[in-house]
Image (cartoon, rainbow, N blue to C red; front, top):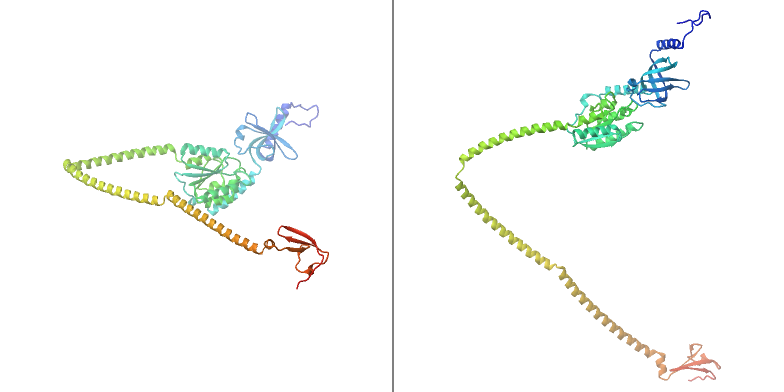
Length: 450
């Protein structure tokens, strides 16, 4: 390395490229590989497939590059604002004089703690025996009804449906939609699992979702869900993530499938293989039928030798036929006679209960009632008229008007009948009622009659 403290006469000037090369050698020699955490910003993903971004904290930032061959192994999709942990080399790009990180691997900054929690739970459940092979239930060879617990909009459910339809379309699939990522995903999956298992309707249950980071798959590392999978009565297949992804449910489930498509292939028999088996069974059946026919032919040949003359058999069968014919005729005659008797009884009952007959009877009753009512009304009216005449006659006997017709008169004062001479005085105006009118008079004198 050149000494910058020499006198001016001894100084040698560096070119810019020489200086940058010196800086590059110093940096790469002193910092070969480092782990660094920070926040992603200004993330760019050009068509080349490389990633370019800045890694920053609250006081500084540094440029980073992660090339296509490296970023394809990242199990999550980074975005601006994500906290990440990088394994990288410090490089110095001489042509621009820039210092940057060449990123080898990237993981979410929270994955380290999650990985430790994963290992602790895995060890605990393994010591309890939840992963032991003796507890694993065998999968049905030809399940008729399969429940799939997954997101209804993800690629995993489409892949499983396509695989089932391609291999064995007769399998009845029931999609139980569930969250597969986020805070409430584990509870949601657990609820759907208990619902499917308690129903007793399914031959197998699949827990599935696509790949992702450890954080994305964390809902399948829930302890309550793991214990529910262990205690389930229905065989359970865990199909979470890609082949390299492992979750707690993978270890507890009866079978772990590398991918959702692999789970469908495990649970669906190969249609082509079944067809080949059917063809083999068909050939075996043909061979057995051929042997049976051969044996039958031999027995037939043996029986032919023992058979009686056809004429004798025909005469015997003719006699049996005549007997059966007579019995059939007799049976038919009895049946016809019974049917005719039954028909006559039904006709008699129908006539007896005919609505027309009932209507005629009810109409006659109505006429009789109407006649009786008219007679009763006439008698009642006559009796009332006779009684009314008697009352009128009695009223006429006591009527003042009748008395006036015999020559009597009625004297009154102030509308009060005069009954005694004490009721009037000299000079009073009185009225005298006779048969055909009234007479107005003035009292001049009164005279008592002894």
